[in-house]
Length: 322
Image 1: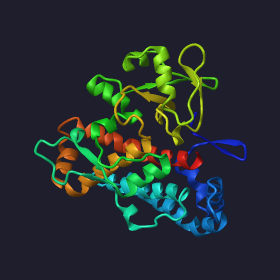
Image 2: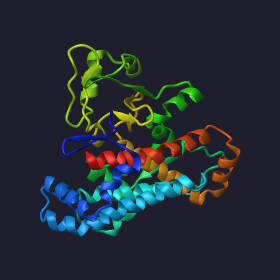
Image 3: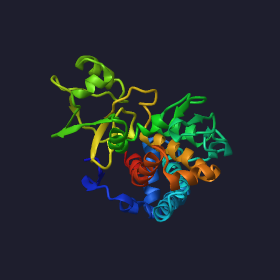
Image 4: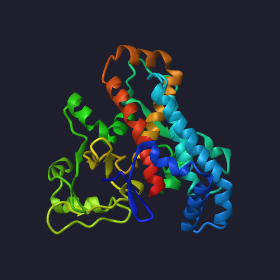
């Protein structure tokens, strides 16, 4: 369903890294960036696309190399490689909307922070990251998703894990709770299951009003039931829908938490940031987790790392094609 991109009015399926092949041509990258800049009415689009063509290409190339190496590496190294791989891919995305990136060194920091020393009986589920004023995270939040004023906010890892739709089954098996509801596709419509109303404690009418306000460009329901029209830009705009890559369908989170509005790309960035910091600086805890598997942290961390290996590039590709 969403594994599609449109090229010269032809529909082609998403095929993992093979779909990025067109970007490994400086000539094509320059044409692509020129189109991006013209769409945003940026001055000197042709010159700037020529200047940034190779930087854009190299960001994607380096990102792919990190992901390739992560697949071949043991678990203890994967978060570090995946985090820096995702960072390179995000920088390529930023370059499509900001031809002068990076203007200052302030935007090169991570943009988030975590507790330097873990407390006794530390659990990853209860750990948190704090959003900073400067750095890549606030920069991409504003540039790519038009989100501002995040400085000082904190998010707990459990909240983030609950926003990864591919982890829904694991949450159900281990904790007996569903975190997502899958949407059915009928013709060119998506249908939300009525059971969602119980999770949100809303009537059908109230839910429709609430749901529609969460879309950047709104959404119109049919007269009867919870059916609305499919829009292939849902993943590249602000919306309450997430895409389950394993099940090949849209899903809706069943929690009305503070971070329901977060694009999934930001969720993956924050989880990988914290895991990469743990892998680098909390050697004893990280080694014990990967060897002893003492609690629920391990299955969720291991599963997320396997998911993000494929989902990260997918989300980037959707953004570039959005």
